[in-house]
Figure 1 (tube, rainbow, N blue to C red):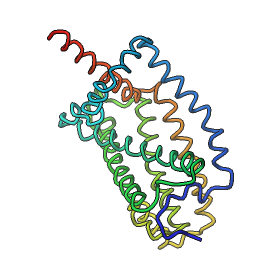
Figure 2: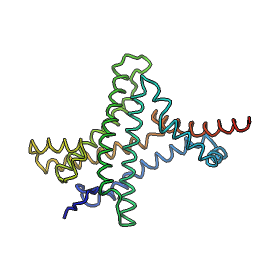
Figure 3: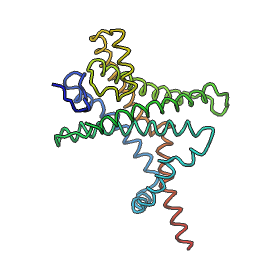
Figure 4: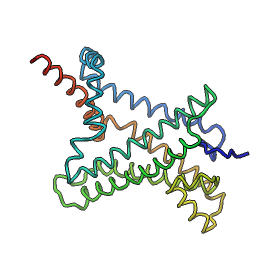
Length: 265
């Protein structure tokens, strides 16, 4: 029996035991990511990291102003929109994915309750659909600058094309999965997933065969997951790592700058 209360339905269209297989598949990707982060942090040294933790409030303040709010980059008219769109698009989708993991793998499994339900879930779906579109705008601008803009210093490189293709694939397949899910499992609250609802309506109008759409959904689900795992696992080793490195530089540079000012007084 389907609940009248909006709720996140995780693994609803996947075979039984998929979550176990997914965790097994995830392990090597997680190990690669953790080792990469460790290698990045190791260059700072233990004493430096310890000092940084003791200055947590100051560092977080600088992070919020310059890394989270992107104040410096947003002030650059030419590339600001592109960077901010991609940054906040990725951040929103990452938070959304972490919320699903928290909700299903921890809260439901160990405590028997869920946070992705009711009005909060409706807002969650609407926000992620909108932020996915924001990300697509940013990726479109990046595609233009890298491939069509004619700026020599921004000529395309294989790594940039890989990153662009990966982010595009994750975003587009996310919408397709949402649309297929709403077509195969119609819910009254589906209209809050504005892009997925639009895709599901198209599938309804063409009377797409359910069995074929179910198989398509399951294949896309794994493809989406594997590409996302790969992108995250390689993050510390790719140019995208500048997101992490820049955040660390802002964090460390912020409290060190404040310490220098305090010593001068």
